[in-house]
Amino acid sequence: MRNLKYSELRKEYIDFFKSKNHIEIPSAPLIPEDDPSVLFVNAGMFPLVPFLKGEKHPLGDMLTNSQRCLRTNDIDEVGDPFHCTTFEMLGNWSLNRYFKKEAIEMTAEFFVEVLEIEISKIFVSVFKGEEEIPKDTVSIDTWKEIFNRYGIKAEVGPNQKIQEFGKENNWWGLPSGGPCGPDSEIFFDTGKKPCGSNCNVNCNCGKYLELGNNVFMEYLFENGMYLPLGRHNVDFGGGLERLTMISQGVDSVYDIDIYKPILEKIKEISNNQNIKSQRIIADHIKASILLVMDGVTPSNTMQGYVLRRLLRRSMRHGRLLSIENSLTREIADICISQFKEIYPKLESNRDRILQTIEEEEMKFNKTMNNGLRELDRFIINKDDITGNDIFRLYESYGLPKEVTEEILKEKNIVVKNPEGFDESKKGHQQQSRTASVGIFKGGLADTSEISTKYHTTSHLLLASLRKVLGEHIYQKGSNITPERLRLDFPHPTKLTDEEIKKVEDLVNTAIKNSLDVHYEELPKEKALSLVPFAAFEEKYGDNVKVYYIGEKGNPFSIEICNGPHVENTSSLGKFKILKQESVGSGIKRIKAVLQ
Figure 1 (cartoon, one colour):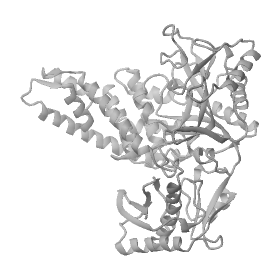
Figure 2 (figure 1 turned 60 degrees about the vertical axis):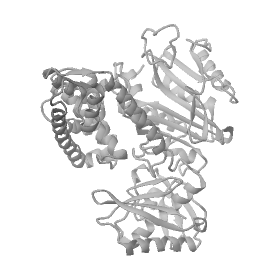
Figure 3 (figure 1 turned 45 degrees about the vertical axis):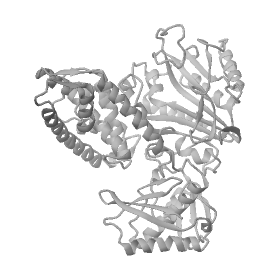
Figure 4 (figure 1 turned 90 degrees about the vertical axis):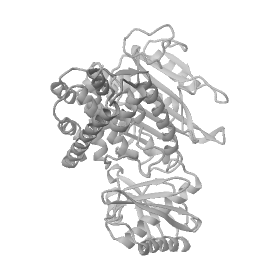
């Protein structure tokens, strides 16, 4: 296999698909526009959900990019050789153009011909058919042809080159419904011995490493039934870090060229060499700089809570490594230097990022001191403590289990039911996952009629706020659910009752006047000259959609947007602001409903 640097492999992928008539689109920020269904962009396809559902993309129907992603469900896995909290996902998409055979052929050509991965080390999985959905014979036959082309007779079955699985492994779809379909995944045989006779590509033993996944959206899940979608989309996603790892022949993603200086610096300042803790610090601080770059600040809710958790977890592992001085600013500075060519905003925001991270470390040190004092109070006149108690101290005060156990040992205090710590932790994780399902249900990915109305209304609200409060108003964040809309914007003070009434009256007048909603596709530079302020402008391609509400020559609202909209404001109903609140320094939030 060719030995390529991280940035080289990234470019090879984009150039390959551009040679196949795909148009490159920019990487979107980690914070989804309108917070559609998840806290973070967690896959390359996520910013493209409206287009996978039928919206016309301004750049065409064959697209490619490398998208920065963040997955919170992998945080507890970080520290092994393969998992990262933030990573880049290489992607290519067909919006009702080519389908299974063409997609698999291009994937195989890139892996085998461009990257020169040995075909003998490639294994694949396909959908075996389940319930009313038939077996994916097209993917099976295509992979057989490809393997045969290279002189390999591929069999289908357990332990074979082509392995079949059901929906649990080879199916993609949102729990709430919508477009869905089978997928075909590509794996690399690392050469490790199998874990047993039943070892397969989905084992976690480390023998097989997933490199990419083609999702074929050809069904619509609605009212408990799978119906023909009426269009065929392809979504490929591949892990850039993992591909770089096997390209460079190293043992973990943290040993590839772009991560190596970060890990080496952590090793240099560590007083013991726990590789798992060192990897966690490298991963979490790198994830943190990207979050701060994209506008997140540490807090106790939503995205800010994840950022705070990442930073504090890296600091706890710094203590486990007996790193004597503060570590986050120094490591964050190296992370910025390593990734600034890919994300230029890291360099332009370097001072703000470093200050944010350093301030959080100072707060955590104070919290740790409070936790130690709380532990002292907790164990006065006690001969024992339970594992559940140790977890409560960890969760409430960030006091690491190892620190607590060391202190207890010094004081000859017995830990009763030590397994209670892991039991409590698992219970907490399950509650978090359950809560996350509730948090992640709504949003733009829900293109129901009411959510579409709220999305259109958010345009009216933003325009009205600008008219009442001034030109400094822009969308800082947004969340749309079928129950209400939420809009965050910069403003130094809360709105007065008079200002709230003016905003409500403007929105309701726009609704009453039955304004048409329409769009035109324009070059980005021209669009930016027309729109008062475009949030997340770096995520837009060379051509964009500009939505007008009202007459084009004198619109009530004009915004760059890819979301779903009603055709006329008369269908929206009556607008009412329910609540306003402060959510950060100089950031205000309005929640409103349609009645």
